Structures are given as structure tokens and as C-alpha cells.
Length: 328
Image (cartoon, rainbow, N blue to C red; front, side, top):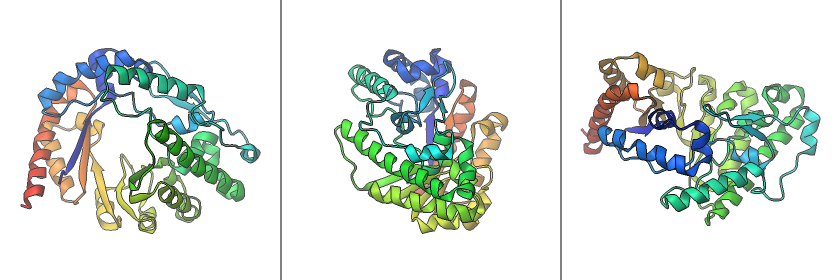
């Protein structure tokens, strides 16, 4: 029973190797070079070096629908909403071929080259989808957040489109990699869902989460959402969430999660906390977070300057994992 989850962040690869974020998305040789260059750090930390893969990318699903994605040289990609008015929702259609979009073709070409250079690389061009509410915001912009009040019928229509197309994209891309969607644990990331008040949340979020989990044949349901409040937490039981990951949620303290979350949850030590706390303070903070009984405490190393502090965090995290296994 592991009580922590640790990763080496992508910005770390950029810092060590000197490649750009754009290259980490689209240059197979640069990706392999980047991952080779972080092996010494992984060895110093006593962790397994990650397998080369393209940079994390949240937007393949909306790209397959025709959304424009801008890739700056040294920062995260940005999407451009293409639904300008509520009336545009009436004309939405799923594509005949989800893999025909130019960006999807480009990503698949990079994956093929990366696979030839490193056969162990995962079958991955990005996350399968964002949750229905987040997808709607990505497609329409922040104006979607008022649509349930102004035009509830069209809000439901867009959420249904986001849900259906996410399921179909997931089926198609999974099939491309020679697999099919099987029963098993499934996760949904839906960060914008918490922007809705509980009453709106119940009508415009919960049914679509439930549908997405059901269609993807989830035997265990995992959720990541960073803007939920205490008042949203009872709904997690309604959709049978097994583990809730609040990420860097600014509204849910460990105390609130302990007292009100109806399911297991994770906690996170954030990068800015690693920068601002001393190694000793971080160790005590880790101990304190364990008192809230999370299923795991998650943290990552994002910059080389954090190495010595991360070593201390890993030491204490491993000790707690040993205790969890032994039951002491």
C-alpha cells in the first residue's frame, strides 16, 4: 500500500536538457534526449526513470472536433474557443473521422517515430478527454458558465455533445492503438465543474459524469477536480466516486476533506510549497498531511533547485509506505 505518488515534472526535462516545450510535444528525438538526460537525477533520487513520452496534453478530444490549439515555444498549449454564440451549438456535429484533424495526424506521426526510437513508449498522444463541463468551457469559453441560467436547453445540448463525442473519440483512439475499452478503473478530470453552484452542479454536471463513467465501463470511478467546494462533496457519493483528487484546489482544506468528503481522497504538496518551506518543514508537513488519512500524498520535482528537499520528502514518504504495508 503506497502512501505517496511522486513524479519528475516536464519543466525539469526542459531545464536539464535545454529543449523547448514545443519540442517535447513534436520532436521525437528531442523527447528521447530529454528523458535520457534526467536519468542521473532519477538515480540520485532512487526512483525509476520515466519512459520517454510526448508532453502531457489535455486537448486531443477537442482538437479532433476542430478546435485550434496554439503551441507556444516554451509554455503550455492554449485552445481557441470556436463556439461564438449559443446558436452555434445547434450546428455542432461529430466528425466522420476523429483522427482526420491535422493536429491528431501530427501527434500520431510523432508517436510512431517515438515508438521506433523507444518501443517502450506508451500508446499516448494526450489525455483521452476533459470532463464535460471543462470541455464545454474549452469549446465556448467562459460564457458557457452562464448558459445554464440564460439558455438551459442549449447548455444541456452542448454538455450532451461533449459527453457523446468524448466517448466516441476515446473508442476511436483506443482502437487505433489496437485495443478496446474494457471494464476497469476510469478517471475523469473536470476542473471547471466547481464553477457551478450546487443546484446547477446537480443538474448540469452529475448526469454527464455518470453517463461518461457508465459508457466507459468504469468498475471503479476516480475524479480529479480543482474547484469544488465543501457543498459539492456530497454529490461524489451520488456518482459512486472511489477516490477524489482535489489537486491544487484552493477551497478544500485537508480538514474539510477529512470531515466532509464521502470517499477516499488524495492530498498534494504543491511546487510553491516545496520552494517556500525548508526541508525540515516539508517533512513535518508530510507527517501532518498523513494524519488526515489520505490514500496518498502526491508531490513532484519541477526544478533542480528542489532536489535536496525532494530527497527528504521521499525519505519520509517511503517510511510511511513501509508502515502502511506492515500495519504498524
